[in-house]
Length: 329
Image 1 (cartoon, rainbow, N blue to C red):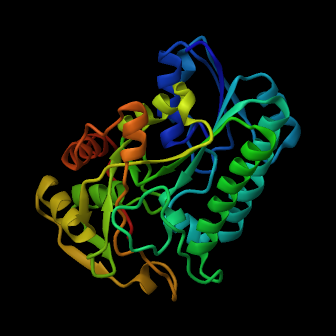
Image 2: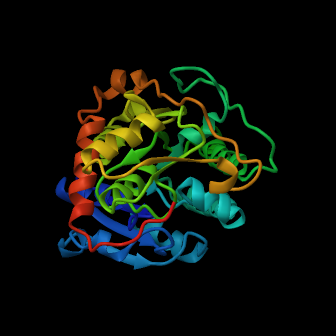
Image 3: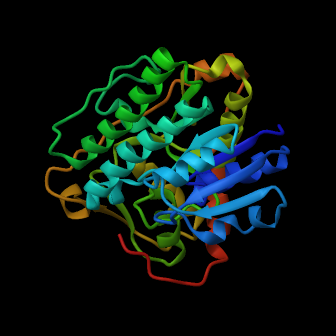
């Protein structure tokens, strides 16, 4: 893999791991990041590699993006607003980042004919009750006055841009829909449930569960997700397609809290927090979200290899090495 890659948002949790994997495979990698949600220490390993270049800047900078895309072979667009709390608290910035930023990157890729992998989200499916969710499942969204659905819409616009440019201008585009990726370097700051709960448990604080805890999710390890992305980037059959990537191991959030409590010493109580107290009045959550990953499995043979317990134990080990701190709900 000797290509030159541009990874937008490469200073983030997922982006830094992908960057390291690309470098290990022999690629040259340029990371573009503003560190809105990413962190410079995430790039500590990558920065020692001779094929790594870091550019601090924004995907809103059209001239910079144009220059970087011109000098690469493949674009991986990860720069986005992430995390339910950030989306709810900063809806305008989230919306503009996820629409205008994506439009700028895609237009540069079209101009130079570069392959692009666009990271989308399971939020695309909205309130669709289908289990499991296949790539052909409908997007069922609520009112545009609810910030969560504004985020879903913004990510859908990015997908539509990628596919319309593929159909009309032959842009070699791949879209991936990620389902709750977790692992080393993930910050609890933006509402990510496992990093937050683990740090609460280690501190002996209450494990806060929003709503009644009956909602379910599937958590995929970042190393498995990166393997899935690499397989799609290498496979010519992935171009012009969308793929779910995530674990199919379903767990309720209440069960998750109980497992975290047990693995962190059993000192913490599990506390239910109403959604309107955790977020805002009118917040809507999703009852179940389980991906159908048969499409990527059929194309590349990919399947997750790490369990939820692997994820929890790894997160606990990482958090245990950090200085003690208070973790808020």
